[in-house]
Length: 229
Image (cartoon, rainbow, N blue to C red):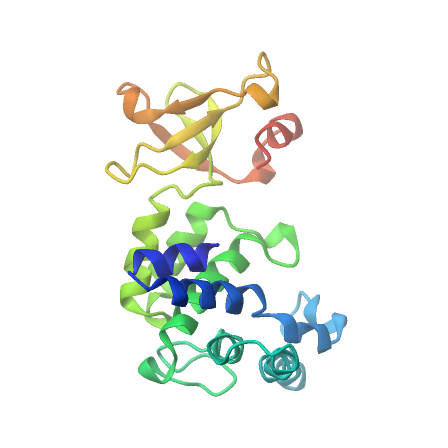
């Protein structure tokens, strides 16, 4: 979904948006041939283990070919771990050697993995994941795609748990394209059932601001469950 959103924002034609959705959906299908002990390992991989992991890209292409996926989707499967600075894998491609659709999926895939790693304890909040990509890793990704992605996701991406200046806790549910610091926030209030939770447009609340972001682990369990943080 993120890949398709970003492709649309980059003015890709409808056919390309459909292809990127297909490629993104199946991008990691080759991981089915990688041993779980490697996929779920929390300590650094050995060189042999890293080579085994990297094999999921060509393995995914082979599976995709048997599924008769379009060539453009196969390229995404092959290249979704390539970085424009040459630091990716499996072929260490650079810049224009990587298809534009693959460059988009490489970015959204990295963002998603930062937010939802194999072990939840390593997860970053959407806000921190976006900050990490922009502040530490943006040279690895297509510059235009990165700029547009940051604009689309906003300062506080959807899914970011926040504390407001009045002490209320909530979770960002939508961005404000005109005022990035004033998103829509679903408020934790046990007086209302979760299904009827109040959503506040901070642009309509000039006295209320976001004071800080919160990691879900820092939230009491009832709050975390209510907000689905």
